[in-house]
Amino acid sequence: MGLMRRYLPKGLFARTLLIIVLPVALMQVAVAWSFFEEHWETVTSRLSEGVAGDIAMMTALYESDQETPAAFERHAEMAYETMRLSVDFRPGETLPTSRRSSFFRTLDRTLRSALSAQIDNDFWFDTTRYPSYVDVRVEVEGGVLRYIALRERVFATTGHIFLLWIIGATTLLTAVSIVFIRNQVKPIRRLADAAEQFGRGQDVDHFRPAGATEVRQAAHAFLEMRARIRRHLEQRTALLAGVSHDLRTPLTRLKLQLALMPESPEREDAKKDIAEMEEMLDEYLDFARGQASEETARSDLVELARETVDAAVRQGGDIEFVADGSIESDIRAGTVKRSLANLISNALAFGKKARVTVRRAGSRVEIVVEDDGPGIPPDQYEEALKPFNRLDESRNQNRKGVGLGLAIARDVARNHGGDIRLGESDLGGLKAVISLPG
Image 1 (cartoon, rainbow, N blue to C red):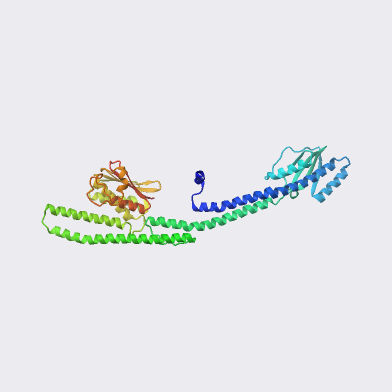
Image 2 (cartoon, rainbow, N blue to C red):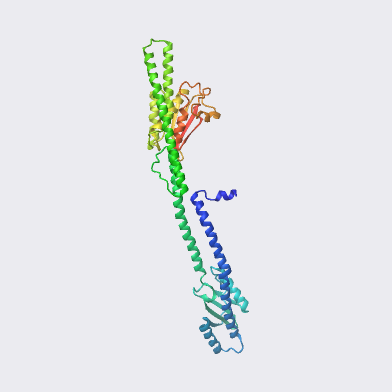
């Protein structure tokens, strides 16, 4: 069973075609075998026996003591007129030694069996030299009797027509099946493509249900699911945007009040707390906003990464940038840029030096961000990618944010049909690899 599963086709089109065509082909083979085994071979055998009897009779007449050459000539003329059998005596000749077999070996086997049963003399025959005749030669005293018989008298000549009908019918059924199955599979493929595009956050408003009732039902379910997910995302974004707006108003008043207060250590601590709260609000909003209102476009990842690195360097970051040439991909440049900026910010927050690499990896594109910080234990990689997870012990007490930097990067990568993975950097710290379709 396991071996069968390994070699069976995996696609729906191929499997459905196999289900329809294989039984038809097996049925046609069974019908053809039954026809040739029970009918065609039996009819051919009877015809061959009849011609073999005629040849045996003419041979016996030639070898009889009372048969004169003139009488044999008359008998030969009668054989041609009544049995369509041409007889010719060739004195001094011997039987040929070469033999050519027919494509249908059953023909040769049937004729040989019939001749062997009715003729004691040595004989030779050829069923391939003449398209419409069969050449049979019988050895007699003084030479060879050569018989030319109509092929249709020796064999049932309609077998190939039956085969053509079988092959033609199978071909026609296969062609109709291919057209029908292709039309049935096409809506399923469109549904799968639409689901994949929606999973990457692309616009699928062009998608319309089509195909069989079950496929249309699945398509309508997909459209309803898409509408629910969109409403959920819009509500989440609106909720966090509203919370952010509502909280920024009192934070602004607190900042104004602190600006009017005299200088003191408590005043500086309060300003730091307010700045941290604003950063938290920005991070919440970035996570909630995701990829709203941004369309996918062909962008140069190398140029995008260079702009992000240059912006971080202007703010005092020590970053090495590694990239060759131009690497393009269908992305939402804004979300990818924010995601990369978050990773670079994290790298500089927990290390003194960072490195950003843009490279191709087969059919995909990778953006690698590394740092020389304390890193994260491998058994905590998955936890670090979860939202609101702060691994303070392994990252030198994260001093800002709410643990959404890696979660945002992963969310952005997955929405583009990719993912993010963590590992150990050559610099000694953490390595985050964003993998995107090429």
